[in-house]
Length: 169
Image 1 (cartoon, helix red, strand yellow):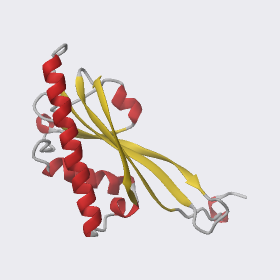
Image 2 (image 1 turned 120 degrees about the vertical axis):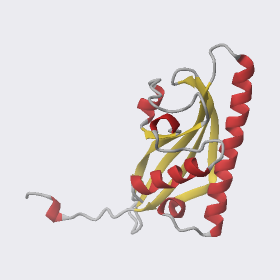
Image 3 (image 1 turned 30 degrees about the horizontal axis):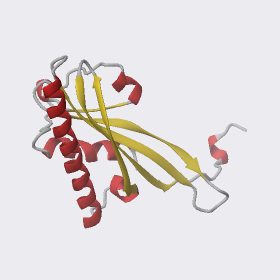
């Protein structure tokens, strides 16, 4: 699976979920993919989080496992956030937005689960561990955005065979 496969799947979700409704026009963007460091740095950029919820996709990280077997694995962790901007100090909006963000997370997870069970063959879905998806409240981040973060694992075979042609000696 490539980073492009991973991102494409979630762009489709962000585009077709009614409460996210991502469009590529700058003033309607509600999808972003970046590293966790950039996401936490409070830079929301050109996201339309004042208008709608946004889906933020974290770059995956992971570990390689061999265990001396013939089946080495690339075990990765990915995550998405559902966030929206609220006025500073607005406790009522904070509770309402967090509640709705969790509901959207559950909706996204149900779509992922449905696609996985229907046998849709995207590289991301083939590698996904559907049985272990965590969720956590987030915020305020990115200039007072709040919501939820969902984390999931996926793994696939990785070729760890040594290739002498990659080396100069």
